[in-house]
Image 1 (spheres, rainbow, N blue to C red):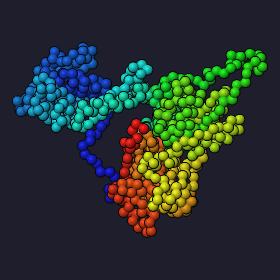
Image 2: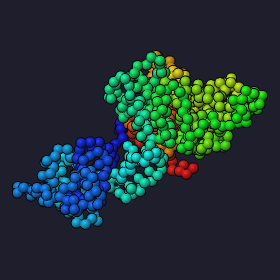
Image 3: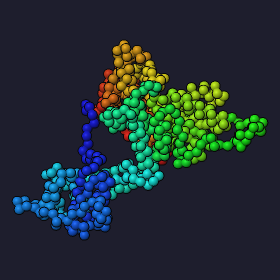
Image 4: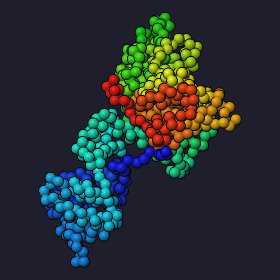
Length: 617
């Protein structure tokens, strides 16, 4: 049985290079050469063009860039040719002589082999150029001769910041590995049009936020995993201690970087693109729990909603002259698992018809927030690691304050408010302050998440019941997990960040550990599904067993919160032809064979994206 997925050949290793103090040599001086030169210049490389005819034979763009001292153009005829001892052609000898004079060449690009170009270089001549480069361990790309290429170019787009129309550091590139270059360009355009116009600005602002987060009076090594996002934990929800008043500068820097990760993961792109430095400072300070945001590019404020008598607010007689402002109301609303199509009619009406102010959890996706009219203020809870309780309190205070001004406040929660959504605390708080909230249920991810993954939480022959629990208790304390019952499905919310501890509790037989479990230990071959971003276009499901799920999660790269766990034999019951024999007499004897057939002999399986039938719904 394979421990890890087998590699499938035919792909490219896609890298991004920093070319400071490096040189790119481009052979040819046609418009394609100009395009390659421009890409290299944007990567801060020096560019040398070598072509027949030198400057006079170059295209207009290259001539202009040479006049601006952006690059150098050399004529093959002006370079030394091959020595008498070599049997290579004139151009190859000239290239060899030139390469021997410099030591910082990143790669060579040959463009005068363009299929429909004038005076196309022959394959034999291009092969000689490739041989010269490879003898010096210099990668080479030869246009329209893929057999001579060490690398290929992706179809690339660099995003602009719509605020000032400047180029940002965000780029995307796509390759078909030689199977359709024109199609790659089309796919690139379609991807670009589907991304928010201000995504480049969002990257620029997050970059600034990241720089501010790492600033500290205490020098902290850049190798610190918490400060190096590429080397840190792949989930922004890694548990942390509550913020203390005497934290060190190092602890403060780590906390701020976690908040950067949370903002990057949860805030709408449009919100990130409009962050000011003052707002960045407030985010990193972490004292507050809310952040005003307009998802339509227009900021509003709930405080400007006027009511009769507002003009008399400064009058000495306001108590007798100003009519009483009617009290507002608070709607405690569930947004469902994430897909806008799963909003209930009541929730949709609350957001689009009744809301004066929306106080949203950070997990509510941008697609749902985008439904809110432009004149409605939206505030997102900053429940980042270490300040969740403080943010929760501030959020409830904001709801009461707005309702007292006569506003209709929609308190928007992911999933269903009563399923690990702190609805109880908020209901009691609002009631104590004179408001009886209207609780509008939402489609719970407890049921919707498994369904989107093709898993029934109950199924005749596989699961007679299910139980729901959380992976983390109040203030980060451990919770007591239920014991194993073959006929029961276990759904765990908010447990992915504590997966190793959770798994240890489920299957350990040690008394010190099993005391945290209310029943028998789980067999290590019990099926498990880790469902990330259920119902969203980038949904991902990892199927495995309790024994291998940690390795599976580590193998798939960056995590996609929020995530949930579904554990039990119902996980495999509808796969392929299905398996309804789990609860048959002596069925345990065939569990190893059952799991092997389900996973196809591998340790895990990963499914990316929604089923095709959900497109357009």
